[in-house]
Amino acid sequence: MVKIACQAIVYGNQDIKDNIENILKNVAENKYDGVEIGARHFYMDKPDYYIELLNKNNLEIPAIHVGGNFLDKDSVSEQVSGIGDAIKFAKKLDCKYLFLSGTYKDQKTDDDYLQEARVYEEIGKRCTHEGLVLCYHNHDWEFANNGRGMELLLEHVNEELMKLVPDVGWITVAGANPVDFIKKYIDRTAALHFKDFKNYDIPRVFIEIGDGIVDFEAVYRYFSNAYTDFWIIAEQDMATNLPEESAKTNQLYIRELIDKVTTRR
Image 1 (spheres, rainbow, N blue to C red):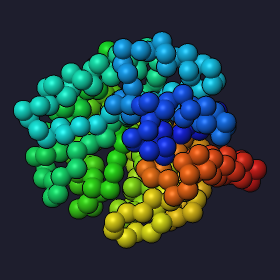
Image 2: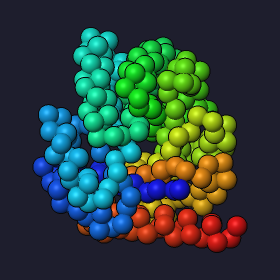
Image 3: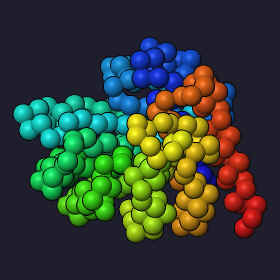
Image 4: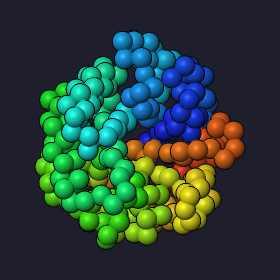
């Protein structure tokens, strides 16, 4: 069964932590199956509070998202310890995945990616120990230089310790083909992030899913031929309408896409 989740970032980073009750209520009203939330938006000493909210709104939480500056060797041990706390918290909320974003740096080197790979191995081990699956969430910078950074990470992190949640929007705006990427790493791809951009220009302009440059139908058609049970997470980093309207538009587009592809088969 294909399930659709909403990344809470569409509601605005500043508003998530202390507006979570209204956000989850709206996510449910917009007929999502689940929600993805960044670890920094939780009070981690209150897992029962979030479990009650999720149950009240009949929502699952497939993933919690984490990130950091993993190139800062002086703080990386502390960062990994903090992510370890997030992993234990995620387990209490019955999450299946921990989604991880890498570190942005202008002109990243091979050594930078290898440093990150060592950190991700450790995070992956901690996830495995707690029964979670670590999934790497890409941006566009990993696809510079013909995807050199992405390839280094995937070569140097054990496949059993890190899967993928490809962000097809970032792949597209980087000038790569998301279907080709997913085909290459189909056995490593666990879920999908759907994001759209108005065009290829910089600065990047986020837009509702289906209104921009990404060929979501090609992505969904291929992936749903390979798997029948997976999550699609709608992730719009900045709403162009009221957040509630953008969230609704994204869910409707994905649901209509699923119905369209299913009908044509």
